[in-house]
View 1 (cartoon, helix red, strand yellow):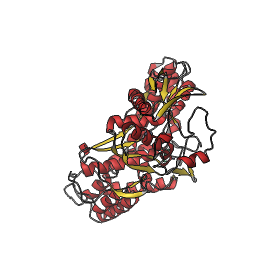
View 2 (view 1 turned 120 degrees about the horizontal axis):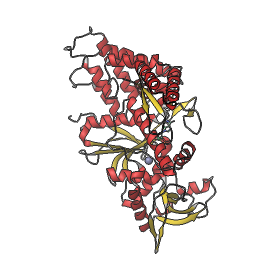
View 3 (view 1 turned 180 degrees about the horizontal axis):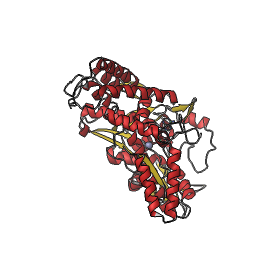
Length: 489
Ligand code: AMP
Ligand code: ZN
């Protein structure tokens, strides 16, 4: 596709300004977004960066050509929260198997959730545990060039990054080291040279997950069976797939400090570059009654619950409704997640689908104003306003046959935001699916089937499976013995 004349402008957290986007290499535009830590279902707040950066990925693909964009979103599958969950949920399995069970199940659920939200798959979805060697190599470089050291803390040996070896540490979050020291609320841990020093690698007990690695600090070489810190994971995966310097790095606002600040410190000091990523982008929080939705606050609703249960607003919601509701607010503003907003989004989609119907048109032409709004730092709320105008214009034309071309613009333009990807018939079917399904009835049928299976009553178990299928429910028996379900499209 030929580049369009509208310049793309993006707000860069690094400079606190909106800037023209100029890729390092227009033949390979590179973006990295921090993905989920896979220990539990993703909540709808976690879906915000996924949807926002999906819109940006689509826009970049339009501007530079799909084959000239590389989008990487990682899976964090090594983390102490995962270990705790593995021990809780699979006490009878050896720890490593239990961890794999937790991360496999959660990652697969995440993939299914974001697919239902209409997101394109990133080009690469690397897992931290597949990139340990890359992490150890970067830590080795940091030790060799004096940016890291080995010290013994309360829980064993650690390799730490020495923040005062980096003259401009703190650029992204605009925190100066002196301020941090003065305001430090945590007691200085004795083994750290500076309270801001952070873990690159930490020793594991024999019962904890770990990898064998050797580190040389000055003249000493130590073998430390251990695991990586969180920040080094993203430095390693972005380097492996995108190089020492790349175009865009994204994530939620909460990642600016310490996660992204420390990624920058590690990558720049290891590779001797002035920049890690040129543009740093951060989405605002999704809130519930003025508070950030988060697992630790316990005020969350999962994507899966919104899609398949009646936990929020007494009914389930099609993924596209969630997507549209999310895009109504500019990505840097906070969103208040309400039933009313979902109802409005659904009404809008009803109307738009009734305008486009089922006919398909050649994929050419979209509304310039909507496109321009997206190019202005992803102004999705402006873009949706433009889409309403396109829809109003097209609704006023008599309903066409498939040869009537003016109507193609609504769908093509909405596709820029990943909306209106279905046909009217598919949309109605999907909606009926989510309206009709009584999830507690589904769950009791699943329970009855599990009981039948436990009693080796295969005929009854198959009968229940067929009964659910007739309701449009597809069951999936997971390796870990649980059964999940989804609405068959
Ligand atoms: P986590 O799994 O907690 O590491 O989060 C994954 C992604 O979701 C990160 O980019 C977070 O910044 C983002 N995130 C977490 N909670 C929210 C929220 N309430 N609103 C928007 N983004 C969030
Ligand atoms: Zn990250």
